[in-house]
Length: 249
Image (cartoon, rainbow, N blue to C red):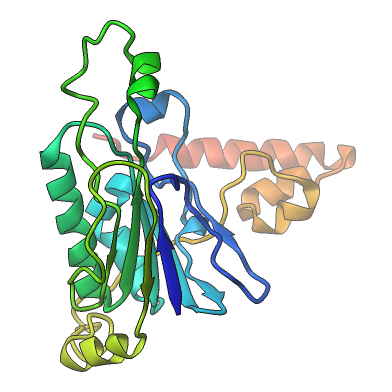
């Protein structure tokens, strides 16, 4: 299998060759200033996609510091994990931390990890920081890489400049790694430790056809006719009394 990683990629869309499916996911928890634009994602993006090259999962940036989010994908037997981090920021320490995160995920998942980081040219930096006040902040922090299930770099990582990494992936390394350590197989203890994931979409807008997904009490109100007003009032009174009896101390 041929694999590509480029610092120009920076969004969580699994666009590898697919049979029919294609996946996209919003970050479970936007980081820092991202929260001024993006809201929290739901669990519907924590799904692995079947593709022509294997089972592909994806997380963005500091989602890799959420071990439960990573395990949700590992438990779905991902073969290739797509990671992406911002680059040209914070300096070498960010690149070092990023490398630790992606190599650790490769080892725990027994999967290949393809990581793409952003890169800002000098002219682009001037757009963000025309006065040069944050020159030290807008540098370094890049580690575009392809990591094997054994936690090693398949090709040397790209740490600065624009470019593309290309590698052939030997998928037999997945079975080799999992013979030694399979975190969701013979090395797991499901009778002691397990993960509960709500992977249903959480839309802001509910339509009548979605009523069967609403709580029973809500359905009774939504389906009631005008002639049911007394019953509605009685149910509302019952719910009010129930809530008043709840001990919130």
